[in-house]
Length: 546
Image (tube, rainbow, N blue to C red):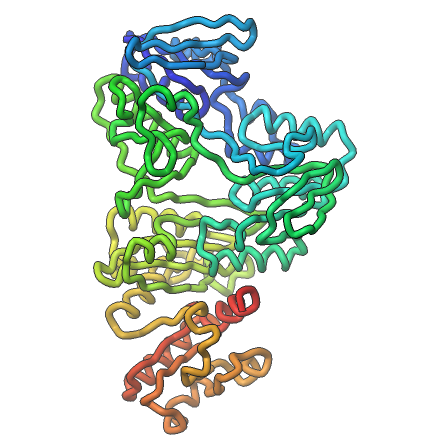
C-alpha cells in the first residue's frame, strides 16, 4: 500500500509515524511545500521574545530523521497542485527545480493545515507587515526586528496568537499597541470574562483598543476606519486562521458547515480512500455533537494518530473535542472548555450561570492567587456544559479537571464528590472545582438563586439589596441602592426588611452573601438572590460595561 500525505507539520507527521509503527511494509510519502516539517507552531511567539529558545528548539526533526527512524520519505519544497480521486493521482511541483510530475496513491491524507486570515487592509502587503502562521513567518519577523531599528509595534487581533505575540514583542523591549475589531479581548470567551483581561491590560499599563478596524497601514503608522492613528513600524496581523482547503475545491470532497473538510470518526472524507486531519478538518463537539472548528496542535496530533491507525487496519475512533484552550499572557492564565454562555443559550439550554472567585491554594500562603471561574450548566439535566477560568496560578489544573468532568457527562453534583488532592501549597480544603459544583447545585436544587452582574446592572432599583460587608468596605464602594447590614447584625435587624420584595444579598466575593441568603430564606423571604462573584465581580462589570 502506498500512502501520500499532503502536509508535514503536526498532523501529517503524526499520521505517518503511527502508520509506520503499525505497518512496516507500506510506502509512505509526505509532500510539504515549506522548508520545515514537524515544527512547534504554538512555540513560535516565544521565539520572538525569548533568547533561550532557538530555531532548533522549534524544528527538532528534519526529513532525514524520519527517513532513518521510520523509513518515511518526506519531500520538502514540494507543492501538490492538483489531485484526481478518479485516477488516484496527485500533481506535484518541485519548488526548488520547477519540475512538475504525477504520483499515484492507494490512500491519500489531507494534512494541509490552516492559513492566516488577511483582512482587506490597504498596505497589508508591505514589507514591515507580517502574519505568524508558519516557521518562515516567524524567522522573517525575527530577521526584520534584528536588522531594523524598530520603535513601535502594532498587533491586529486579540486572539491566542495576538496576545502571545503582544507579550513577546514587549519582552523584546518594544512599545506595543493592540487593536481588536470586536468589542472584547479574546472574543472566543464570554464578554463578562473578557473584561477581566481588559482590567489586567489597564493594571499593567498595556495599550489596547476595541471596536477598531485597521483601514490603512503606512510605513510608520496604522490608521483605522474611525480615523485613529497608531504609530508602528512593524505590524503583526493576527486576525485568525481558516482551513486550507484550496486543493479540495475541484475534487468533489464535501466541506462542512464550518468551512473545513467534513470527516467522520475514522477521519474519512466523503471521497473513498481520502482522509483529512488537523486544521483543515472539521471536528464536532463532545457535548452537543454539533460541528465546530477548533484548530489546535493537540487535536491535530490526535487526529493524525487515529488516521494512521485506521490506515493500518486499527480500530481507533475520533470522539470529538470540547474546544479546550489555554493561553498565558504575562502572568495571567486564561483557560476555557466546552460551551460559552452564548453557545449554550443559542442551542436552547436553560442555563445556570455562576462566577466563583477563590484562591488557588491556602490563602495564608503569600504566594496564593485568586482565580475567577465562570461555569455554565444545564438546569434540566444538571450537566456541566462549559467553564472559563482566569487567574495567575492553578488555572490549568482546574481546567483539566473540568474537561474530564464534562467529557464524561458529569453533573454539577458530581463535582463536590471528586476526591481531589489537597495540601495547603496545592489547593484549598474545598477546591475551587468542588466549590463551583456546590454553588451550581445550590442554585439548581436548593433555590439559592444567583443573579449575574449583567442581569443586575441597570435594574438595581427593582430589588431590595442588602450589602452584608463591613461598614468600612461599604463606605469605600457600594451599589447605589444597597443598604449596609453586616451579616452579624442581620438576624437582629431582619424586621427592617420587606420579606415580600425581591431581595439581593451580597458580600465581596459570594460566600458571606450566600450565608445571608440562607438566613433570609430560612426566615420566610420568598425570592432571594446572591450576586454571582459578589461585589468584586459586579464592580468589575460596571466599570467596563456599565
